[in-house]
Image (cartoon, rainbow, N blue to C red):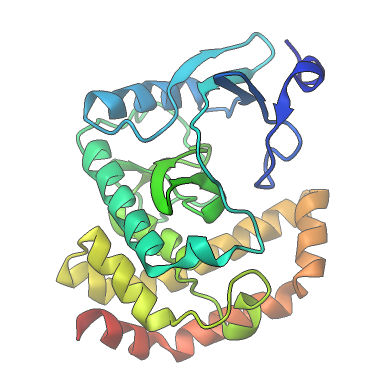
Length: 271
């Protein structure tokens, strides 16, 4: 079946930019473009279940034209601008707990070092555990206001658990200057308090708490490089989004804000 055939008898699923317009639900299955690492990812998703984490899609198969079939996970997925219900403190705690459960299962699975995992948003320091790397609101399924599952493992790659927490914090605290945050998030979110809630709900160690603000700054730089690469390649979605969201001046502002508040975030995590 081709994407055109899927569109004819399936429900288009919206959200995200990498596969926009190419993901369809067909009954109990989701059909989407298969990432280059699909076979290794499918093996990993099956191994997660064997280690007690069943809060991710179950792989069903691959088609001849490089599309994958996964089980559909029912629930609510928030899209920008994000509604207030997905940014409550209880929702944030559930995201931290879900990420910790993912990591506990992933840590028990040997990473296939023969696979060329994507480097787009991967931990530059590497690691022995497969990280999700893109735990944004669009990739978390909620039920009754609590995080119930993670989807879209396309950018998964080996890294440190701390890196995944840092990437998650960028989207869920969010670690954005107030001007940037107001474009997509409800007003009144207290970043230091929310960062502490995420660290507490995940169960972050004292050393990782001390290292988290720096990891978030590093992750933000990686995200900027990712966008720059997409724009340089002529990706229309990322080019348009960059222009609509304030261009590179927005990224400058975000990074300057993070650096200026480094000590404040460290104190919120450790005190």
